Length: 114
Image 1 (cartoon, rainbow, N blue to C red):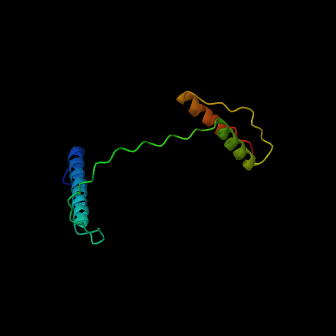
Image 2: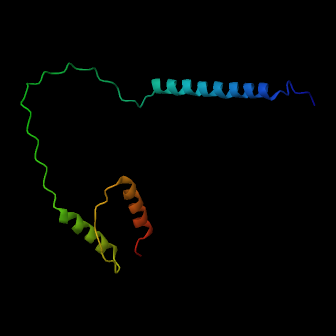
Image 3: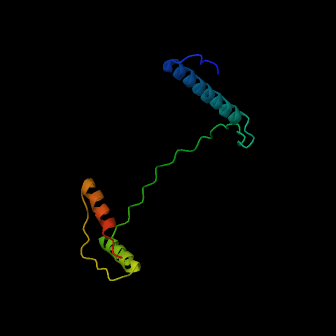
């Protein structure tokens, strides 16, 4: 057997890192080259001059529809009824804080009715 060229781990690391990064740089150039010659890329159309649109008065935004607060209760009741079983809705109340909201959701997931 022959003697290794070096036993210094720092030099071995530098050689290995150089090889790895050289391969990565070569791969990036290959990817860029493939993107340049890609036959499946759609052809670019020449840009047309934008046509001047006549200035129109801004249209009034439609009014937001009024939301019935009982609609949320009906949707939740329908979801519980569709789930089946003997589950009852005890209370429905909005959660105000973001922190409490996530804890409440986690507890709701853990305490599901089977």
